[in-house]
Length: 425
Image (cartoon, rainbow, N blue to C red; front, side, top):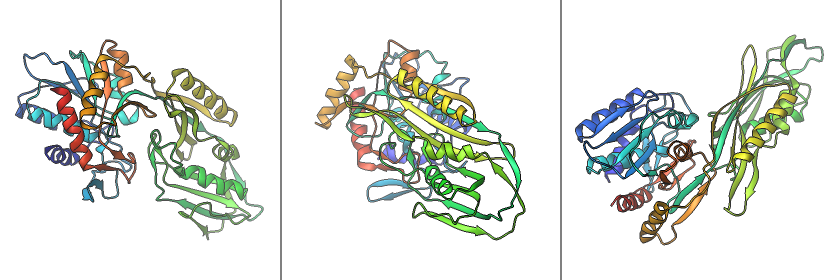
């Protein structure tokens, strides 16, 4: 299938969030080859369209991918009908959507084709878009469950906290130094996977530290702001032998004796240990998580200790509440707090376009339905920027995005492409 071939082609193009030029050059060349105009705005978004034609539908995907290792280019393999990657994220989120758009360019379709940048680090491209789109309808291709037509999504905000309190103390009690590591947890997307009981490496490691009443010297863990942490590492000083809190945890003694060490603020462990991580509210009406928050990354430097959290809600008022509550709590534990990357919730809303998409989809899948998801979609931004535009989102089955387990159902990619072509027709 041409879509899969194109996906493999763009996979070798560096597309980690924050990397723009290689993919921009790829699309410029591809558009020229297929007789499309290609524009790039100052935010590094890309818009392609046919000369002297008036499109009715804009197809939209983000071109950046989550790279758990900076600069990592996925190595794709096909296993039992699924696309997977070797020890990295796959990038099907949202590379498959980009591949759909490229395939339709090769078919010479009269469309606006919008490739946005840096979605994975705060919907940055969508927020700063400069294009005056002509279409009255937008079909986002960033959904990850076949048969679902997304008409609503969670809003989100990233919270950054810093603690600068530490002291050098004399090891009068002859405490032993230990290195605690936890790795190879499942990880996952902190929105769509937040209700799946995926273990958080940072919560597990602080449980072990807290329960042996240790002094914290160093703690680092987590991969990306929108991922559930799958690994963490700590150095502690303790009079008690730490106990393993997960089968993937390893504890070893650091043999080098120490007369003095730098002790971080004890409130750091108290905060992470006691923090109510994961789902905070459930909406029975739409059968979806309403509000959640995830401790994503912690890091220790010479000067300070940092915590990064990602909060989400399907309701903008609830998002404001969880943001303010978390700020107050962090400050009470001795942190200085900043926020960024805020994007609004997209309130579920039906339209003539969503009804047509549903009817067309049902020809292919009788169980097709209108849904809302607990993850951020750029649709929320576009609905604010283009208020008269009718918007919905579809996509194939993609499992465990933002993790090494990410996989994409090849047959589902075929199925959704048939639906997509019917919608355009």
